[in-house]
Image (cartoon, rainbow, N blue to C red; front, side):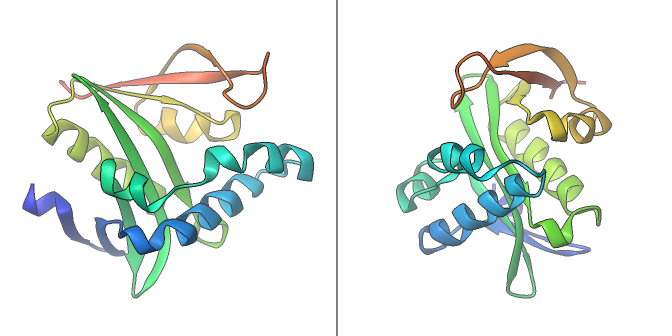
Length: 162
């Protein structure tokens, strides 16, 4: 697991998140979600779901993409047996479209595989579904939003055993 814990990338270093970075990562997630033009009420309703604690960073695999001291993105996994859930993958709005999301995705796939996962699943924001499809994930249905009752979100699946 040493190679996955900190891995130099062509565009920065992907490393384990530090507990002291919880507030910074929460703010990054909020900015990234807001990029899609959601209104203030929607964003405030999402705030709790977009907030990470220091304990979250200790308890779950959370990795950041560190670009010369600037955190430009992160992802979080939740392991449930051989199913690994990608619960977060966010990139700073100013850094979108530059390949950082793909770097984080590829690292998440490698990490999930190293953790014994056979399938990676995620509940996608509708705006991000195209990204996940481009990464090879397939829509496997819809999942209810944890924030808004009655709102359905794309549920994506990616096989880790090819």
